[in-house]
View 1 (cartoon, rainbow, N blue to C red):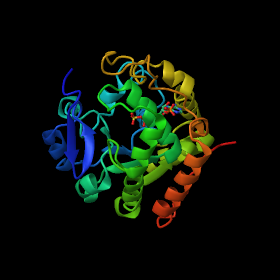
View 2 (view 1 turned 30 degrees about the vertical axis):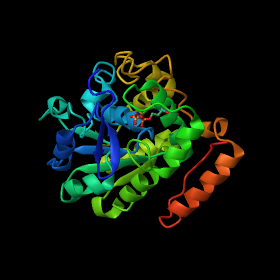
View 3 (view 1 turned 135 degrees about the vertical axis):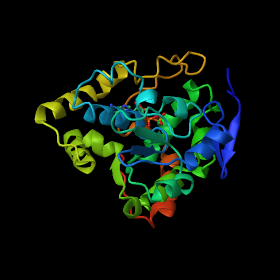
View 4 (view 1 turned 90 degrees about the horizontal axis):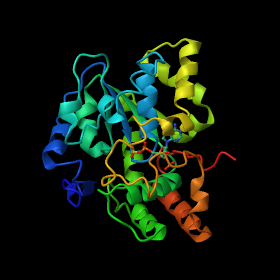
Length: 288
Ligand code: PPS
C-alpha cells in the first residue's frame, strides 16, 4: 500500500508518510484561510471526529443527511493530508478544516486570518491509551510490543505527531492571539448540551432547542459508532484493521485506569506536573 512504511519528518516531528508528504506539509503551512473557515485543531485521539460531527450538524441545522452520507474526511478534511486540495470544496457555506499540526507549524498561517479556531483537548492518559490502540489498527503507524513501550515513547514525545504536552501548551498559548475556542473531550462528556450551546455562541450560530436535541442525539457514542461515515469502516482493511481495534473503541473518560499500573500513574502525574504547571491547564481524569 502507498507509502505505508514511510515517515515524513518536519520540525523534528514524525508523521505517517501514507497521509503526508513534504509538499502537503508545505501547502498546509502556506494555506490562505478565509473569513468563515472553521478550523478544528487537536492532538490525535482527543475528540477530533466527535467535533467534526458536531460542526457538520451545527451547519446542517441538526439535519443528519450530510453526516450520514458524506465521510468525515470529505466534509472536514485534514489540511496537511495529501488529498486535502482535492477534497476542499469552495463556495458551499463555511469550510470545516481539520488539523493535527502543532502551533509552531500552523499558528503563523492563522495569525492574521479571520478563521474561527477550535482546539479540542483530552486528558493525556486517555489519549495515550486510545492512541496505543489506534497504532494497532492503523497500518500506517508503527507497531509497539506493549502499552508500556508505547507509553514511554508518548511521555518522551517520541511518537508520531510529537509531544502531547507541547501540542496542548503551544496551542493554548495562542488562545488570546487567535481568539481560539478551547474545549475538552471531558467537558463534552460531562455536559454535552452546555458545551454545544457555548460552541454555537462562539460560532454565531443560534439553534432552536429541537436542533440541539437532534445534534445531541446524533453525536452520542452508540449512534456515531454505527455511522459508517465516521467510524472508518469504509477504509480498506489493509489500511485500518478493525479486527485489531475499532476506531470508535470505548468513548469514555478514565479508560486509562484499566491500562496504567500504579507505578506508571505516579510517574505520569510527576511528568504532567513538570510539563504543565507553568500553563495552568487542568484536566479531568475521571467522571466518577
Ligand atoms: S483521530 O484519529 O485523531 O481523528 O481520533 P479522534 O477522533 O480525535 O479520537 C478518537 C477517540 O474519540 C472517541 N470518540 C467519542 N467518544 C465519545 N463520544 C463520541 N461521540 C465519540 N466519537 C469519537 C473514540 O471512541 C476514540 O476514543 P477511544 O478512547 O479510543 O474510544
